[in-house]
Image 1: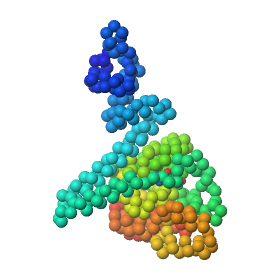
Image 2: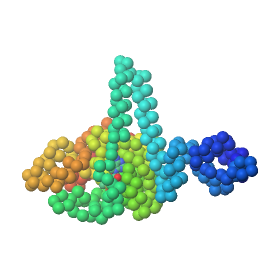
Image 3: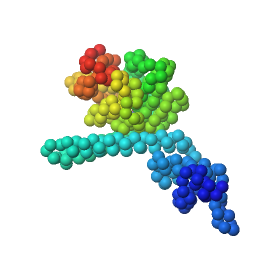
Image 4: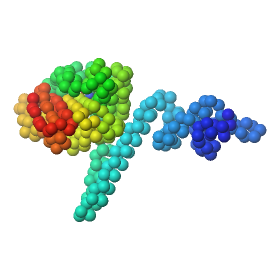
Length: 347
Ligand SMILES: C[S@@+](CC[C@H](N)C(=O)[O-])C[C@H]1O[C@@H](n2cnc3c(N)ncnc32)[C@H](O)[C@@H]1O
């Protein structure tokens, strides 16, 4: 097939095709007598992939990596690209919102608004995985069954996940997002009810494990502060043992992200390590000090156990109806339904 024919078939120009040839992404055979290029079906397929990836914003240098790396599937690349685009999109939304606020501000102090935007950008980009969850993925399901020497962070794990799955009532055909899904232990419980489950995690190895165990779960790379979903997309959002990996100031931004992707009347359920409030945290830590339980204190201080009262304040401000349940001194469930008359029930 000659270049003009290929260009017509792929709705592009010969010039564009020559560009990718110059970049070394395709190498059609050239006739010795007249230098005319001849494209095989394989060349055309490769070119169509290149054009498709360019159309969704993948830079040429990354396309080269994709085409040359046999270990990573196209699906994985698309997943990574989608998550990068969502991050950009959310950043753009923050910027547009700031411009709106700048236009509305009475005192003309647009500098303060720009600094707020700067802080948001740095928070959204600042998180990094200091626990190396990719490394933990292979043994995660075994490790959660182990008891620590003097502190069992997974005490009541099964009971809590079962309670979340029972509490969040989703219809057949509904959708549920599990954030920080890990190996799929919570999200998978909704599959039996015919719910479409989307699992988001920042760890690709965790997502791989989850897909091996539950191929029906749709996995997406992403993180709490830039969820790779459009607005008002899911009926339910659940998350277990994940939120305590982000600092307190980020948790409220994470709640706003969950709220963004959830439909009206959607249900949100958080199972996590948290204290009821500041006093409760002090009381529990003091008790560990008294018994010289440095294992417990070290574990708590290594992570960001929430202050449940602050989460509840956020839900109240955002018109959620909330129920809470405490499993033990460090583990709670917060179940919240969007846009219902606001009330806080406890235990
Ligand atoms: C302790 S595991 C919990 C896994 C699972 N939800 C469960 O209950 O067994 C924490 C998971 O949260 C994920 N995670 C931690 N911080 C995250 C973040 N900021 N965004 C997305 N996922 C995160 C980790 O990669 C890991 O898979």
